[in-house]
Amino acid sequence: MSVSRLLLIGLDGLEPTLVRRWITSGDLPHLARLRDAGRWGPLRSTLPFATFPAWTSMMTGVNPGEHGVFDFARLIRGTYDVEFVGAAVRRRPSLPALASEAGLRVACVGFPATYPPEPINGIMIGGFDSPVAVSIDDSFVHPPQLAEELERRFGRYVFADFAETRSWLPGWHRRAARKLLGGLERRARIAHHLLDREPWDLFMVHFGESDTAAHHFWAFHDPSSPRHPGPRASAELQMTLQRVYMALDDAVGRLIAQAGDDAHVMIVSDHGFGGAGDKVLYLNRWLASHGWLTFTPRPGAAQVALGASIRAGLNLVPGRAQQWLWRAAGSLAGRAEARRRFAGIDWARTRAFSEELSYHPSIRLNRAGREPLGLVSDDRVQAEVDALVTALEALRDPWTGAQVVRRAWRREELYSGPAVDDAPELVLELALDDGYAYNLLSSGGPGPIWRRLAPRERLGAKGAGMNGTHRRDGFWLVHGPRVAPRRKRADMLDIAPTALAALGHLPPAWMEGRSHLPPDDRAIVVAPPSGGVTPERRPGSYTPAQQAVVEARLRRLGYL
Image 1 (tube, rainbow, N blue to C red):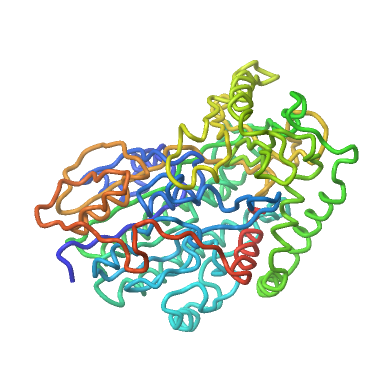
Image 2 (tube, rainbow, N blue to C red):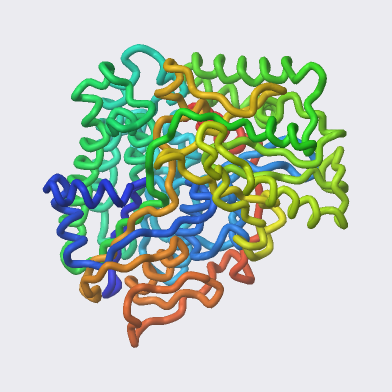
């Protein structure tokens, strides 16, 4: 065993203001103890502050332009279709792989964008982009035989699973609250079981319940929310988000007690959280109103119907059948998703378009030579981007007159590295409307640029405007023998170098973040994994079966 050991706990979407509030009220005693004796503060996420790019930057210590993961899906070059991405396309080695190559024993449990699992010196269980919540098999774990052990000990489902697209159903929120807490406890028991197997050098575990609870219960928790359900907000539902945080604190306390006093502990969230308002912006309709986009005369009714029927049909199919169906369907699901997402666009008369994602607002150019019906030539790119920036930053809220786009970022301002060309030409940082986020929904054709949500829409399902949304600043802390108590802002890229420092190693030169621990005279530089000649991994892609499984899992969670 190495002298230095590290327990790294990912708490997805943990909101710093709620942590401070509930530490002050005495409801998070274990996080309070870690914070009071450790280094902690806000953690600046990636742009977009979305799950896949943020956790991948945490794992690699580089920006998305270097590692190549900007979202859970990407446009297939030369088409208008999408494919689903994760560990298979990541261009840099991960923290577990680097620690493994250094001879350390490593366990990594449940982090997003880690499917298919890497063959590390230890164990790895894929995150929500794996089939882990559809059914247990050996495709999502390393070593494969671990799957049988987990199923025998913990049952068919490893993590909680419920259809987040069905939140409009009566009683859904009460059932979801119970499943969230039950799934959290199940994951904690799995982590305890694995942590007890051997004295790991690096043990990493991810809990996603804080993110899911905030997406669906923020309006219940926040009486000022424009989406607060009023009399429907029972005391039980108002307390759900706080109860999830308290259960996470309890899980953290048990894990750090099991890890021992000599271990360093890191807590990391990929982004923060806040409420969503009731105003909806249709970006593609706005682009059409300014001449950048044209809809077909009959705006893709068949495409919309195809995508909607696929989504509705899948939600009625049991989990195991969903997995089989999407394995059989291959890439058809990706093509169907693209047709739903881009319904009604007349590509031959469109210069710019948006995928209209609330968590990743962006604009892409329809480039000649890149897209099949691209119009924007290379010598026109800069002029189009400049004009879009000016128009977007002049966009105003029709009810208040306030600026809507705080900043339209050119991709070169945010990213550097070999994957920059995969990013949208513009990434939008939206302003808040009196503290609440705007909602982006799919246009599907011509219509009003703005509207307000109807009362029945305010609690919002995944893909239909959820009532809690991401904020850029998450939370981090590090606690251990070499840590002096201090409040310190950090960047997502700093987590991997800090973790390596806690393990007694120096980060490789290509990492862009910096360590927040004092240097150790005995530290050695981590070498790249032996699977590649250089530290840059050759990006691959999912096999058809893996692609189909990822699609099934993301759709089950309501991302599609």
